[in-house]
Image (tube, rainbow, N blue to C red; front, side, top):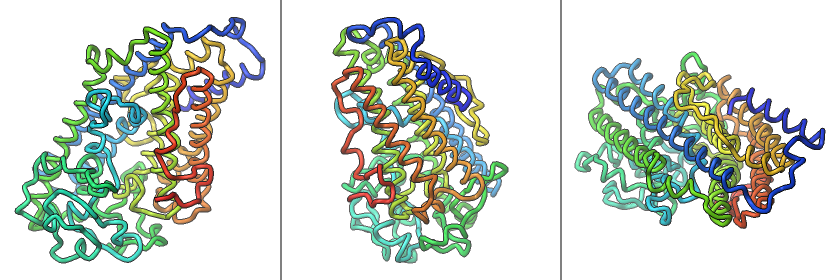
Length: 484
């Protein structure tokens, strides 16, 4: 949701709170949910999912085109264009993360078993030492950061990868071992280890191949306190771009051909996986057809609980905890979401925006020129959201409370985004736990999730919509270390 719309919604909601009533308040709250209104929420939610995943497919296909152009003419300009295409591809996808945690097509192929392609699309941290060479040290890039305890790739004879193995010359990895065939079957062996540090596919595998490690200005691993010396800027938008993979890795290096091969296989698999998810939300698809039906109070509550579980669990456990606090409390660059490109500030913004999309029933599109404003609006949705359902049921107080919570979160992620654009990306912000923007956003997301849970309680959904097992972080206290 754009800022102007959010500000207008906040103003209207606060006015309702201050004045005490509006036209809807004069109506008694219904006994149970209005099934017609619930179905409008469900259809809007499905429309947004299909629109955002469609945009994710389109931008992934543009990324494939950019990679092909880079292979045909491996210049620095074409490498930069491929990086730009990757950054743009993240813009719509980041807004879809709210569709997780509910057995939707991203997490499940049959609405019951957790066998969906999410792990192949967006899992992290990446097993970069399995893919290509890395530099190691005893702080930011030691075995506990780049090591892989378990994998099914054929690298190192199937044995574990520690910092010493990863930094051997020549290092043992997929790119360097020409006996390992790079194909979709190989990349499907991802996130199979218990700690999931064997990830070798999806957005972040492509990110690593394009950017490489985010090293310091001497092309050496950072030590947890010198990341400010590694900051560069990305084109005119002044986005920190992180890694410093040299162009020669794709030109004169003996394994240049294998890097291009890996990129081609990875982007093809990414597109195929995204299409599978998108098609599950298409009109007439079996998943969508079942999802948008609310023929009884029980069914209506179940479907609303699914939407709100995605919102609540993403807000608190996944975004505030796994994607922010783990890295923040431990000053761990390896645990930030987009650590190679320094694009984590956008991950935070977009994931939080996805929650707002579900609440307001809106999808503004995506940002194609990376200036912070959505400008591709061909699939934009302006529908009937949870806020409308609540207003029509007389729960204006809950709308006001949720609108205020979303606004507080937006203030936090906007500040982080502005800092990154000015040259202080997330991995620099986390060098000190005194950084208020990161801590404030974690707390705001925690508070936001509590309001989501309150709404679920008031609607008597009978479900826990903020999964307590989603993270081992105490997101009320952002500086505390998350449990293993």
